[in-house]
Image 1 (cartoon, rainbow, N blue to C red):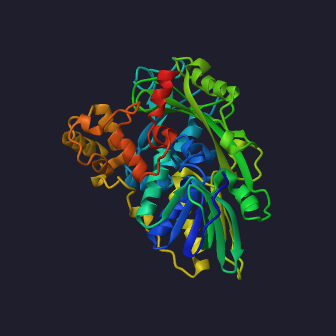
Image 2 (cartoon, rainbow, N blue to C red):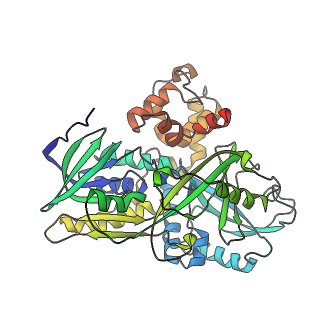
Image 3 (cartoon, rainbow, N blue to C red):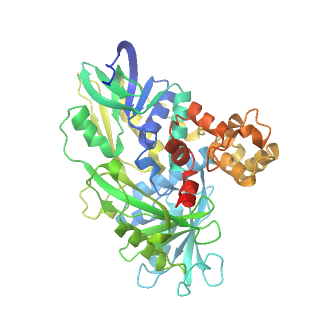
Amino acid sequence: MDAPAPVTDPSELYDIVIIGGGINGAGIARDAAGQGLKVLLCEKGDLAGATSSASSKLIHGGLRYLEHGEFRLVRKALKEREVLLRNAPHIVWPLRFVLPLDDGLRPAWVIRLGLFLYDNLAGRRRLGGSRGIDLIATAEGAPLQDRIRKGFLYSDCWVDDARLVVLTCLDAAEHGAEIWPRTACIAAWREGDLWSVTLEGKRTATVSARALVNAAGPWVDDVQQDVIGRDTPDRLRLVKGSHIIVDRLYNGPQAYILQNTDRRVVFALPYQQAYTLIGTTDMPYDGDPAAANIEPAETTYLCDAINRVFQTQLTAVDVRFSYAGVRPLFDDGDVNASAVTRDYSFDLDAPEDGAPLLSIYGGKITTYRQLAEHALRDLLPKLGLDTKPWTDKSPLPGGDIPDGDFDAFLAEFQADYGFLPEDLALRYARQYGTRVYRLLDGVTSLEGLGRDLGQGLYEVEAQYLREHEWAETEEDMLWRRTKLGLRKQSVGG
């Protein structure tokens, strides 16, 4: 059947149309809608369907970026770490890292200097500082090989990356933005001081906009060239990062950052109570970002990094699940993929007689809110508007937990819903924060959750995800809105 013809509605005029439902597009939509602009965000797939759900799931300054002289980026990210911890304490929480000293790699004084800078570049209010640790006969050292005797402790934060995107879009929608997943932008052209934008997919329409934002991530140049028809120099550097998930390697809430012989680092992170998440790789990539998968050599690389330091030895057969994401980095000319800047860059095309176009290159999940502020600071004056930043002190949906004390909130929630199993109560509280009371409105017993649709996804939750969080498919629900798909993967092999 032929696709329906686009419906043109001249009255449908938006201030900003945003292409891309990853973290950058979501952040800009939220900020702009909160400033009273009429905003439409379109995404060809599901929200957070690509790079933004394939990260290492960290809110961090990037300790290793100091080696590349990225002091400005690290400072910016460290400041933002505190903001996100305050505004989303249900999906962002502190994580203590163990950095073992390894003979023949970075000497202790170099690491100590780096950690001193990390502690002091932006100040800390909620996170502990770094310190040395004797790993012999300590809980942190117990999983490690006997030759690893000393190390350091420092703090960063964990984040549920896909939920960060969804909750940011949810807040945008609650401020008036229209969020259209599964709707691709297939053409956009200037008509004087407006953009005409043709959208096709779940919704089909041609709309007008005063400004267009290209936040398509790995497809940003494709949108510039194929959708808008604009010749641009190659600015994009695609770098693939892959991760593996194995059964839990160790007890305890700590994470590990492991030095590798190629001077990169590999993280071992506690994940979903029963697993350890290990990553990431850095490989140049020139294929279709949607088709990115981990390669056997990457699995070996990550297993070898663990096997150099941990007592437990891994092989490919131990991998429960793996994923790969393509980072759309701004090409700064560095030959080493690991050294390419993780900061963002803007391409603002704003002719005097035409509507502005802002294309976004690079960026980190940690600094997405600052990127959105910066984008609007550059874009809104082109529309004759002043920008009024507001998001730094505004909690994301579910994040209005008193004093950010998640443990106290969890205890109160468990008391209110004592019939919930402990692990289910924890998952609900983490995923939904204070919105969990909306999820469970009227539920007074375990039976009231409805049927278990598989892996602990009950009917009440599935309905909530469909009605409030744009979830449509099993993958949307089991992988991006929840992580219950991992249970299915583990049971089914």
